[in-house]
Image (cartoon, rainbow, N blue to C red):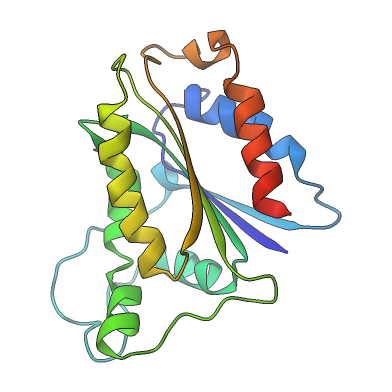
Amino acid sequence: MNIIVFNGSPKVKGNIDLLLEEALKVIDITKHKVKVFNLNGMDIKPCQDCGGCDNTGVCIIEDDMKLIYNAIREADRIILASPVFFSSVSAQTKIMIDRCQSFWCEKYLLKKELKGPLYGRKGLFITVGGRKNDIDIKCSRETVKAFFISISIRDHEIIGFAGIEKKRDILEHPTAIKNVKDAIERLIQ
């Protein structure tokens, strides 16, 4: 099974990094191929809404997204992890999502559904937000839901943790690591 992970956090060893580090231990790398994309370190330009992908489903901007496009096409499972920034995903995550407009064009304008590999396609969104209530998590969930649907992932789970303000706060959450590990287990079954 091909599993790709998008880490959209700009913080090294921040809450998202810590959650992913623990959660990915669940995956048996002798049975599954795992590729992690640390979006903060990649050269990804924002979508220019230029229409270049309207007739082909292929983005005309040349940058590191070409690696991501290929990985998405081959993925059985996609894990997207991002902190909440102003009621949405991080800028690094949003740029990658916006550049998946070419998949939207392929699917809706060209009527070519992105076919899943052997195991079908499933997704998981992992997020943390600083507010004590979960309104920001609910808002970011809508962006991610649209992303998953555009890349033909209808079956997805969203797991978020509110009130996680400071770096490493996630380690004080009583169930976060277990909850994320359980979500990964469900994802790869």
